Length: 249
Image 1 (tube, rainbow, N blue to C red):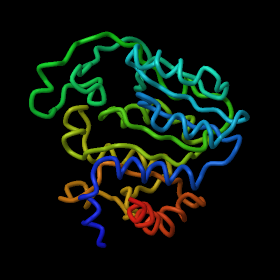
Image 2: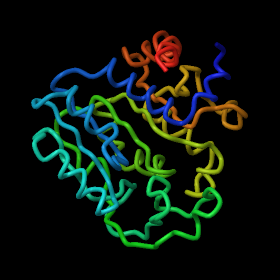
Image 3: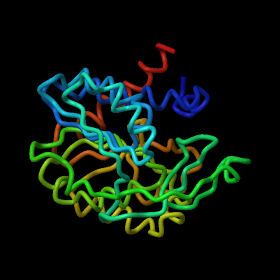
Image 4: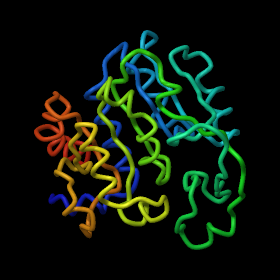
């Protein structure tokens, strides 16, 4: 099987890669950020991995989803639910709640699958930043799937990122995302360079400015702090890990 063949395995395959990444890297006692927690697909297994001495800070701006996740994790003292959207500033913001598929909801107007735009409800949500709401303990891993808002959310976590240097797995769809949220490719790559991070796509291939418009590029990207074991993992382990995940399907 070639890398290009992996796109045929469907969207849940990429979520399984993310799960394989944090299952490999996390240990009991770690602190993790789950941004865009939704129904808890990643929150719950991460909570099991870090145990009661760890912590999972799960951000979910949609009130009823945050409430349901709180109910699911009521017995998990290591899970903290934050009913807010991550951004580069705190306050209130307009939010597009896509009634037909809440997973497409986000802070900015963007292109949606046919028919979904007609189901958008404009609501107000609270916004917060990573620097304001994470614990003082170092963050080990960040999973971020917030429908295009990842760039600004990471901007709002500069101090935490520079202090903790966590491994980051985040969704990013290239130019359509940048256009919707008002930033350039140069600003995108400058952010990670200024933080001392190197980028890969979720298949373990280096991701730089020349790859921005690559026709076949998975939406999930991985950012690792330069000179860390996470960078070694992305370069050496991740390219083989994806095929191990594929073989189990």
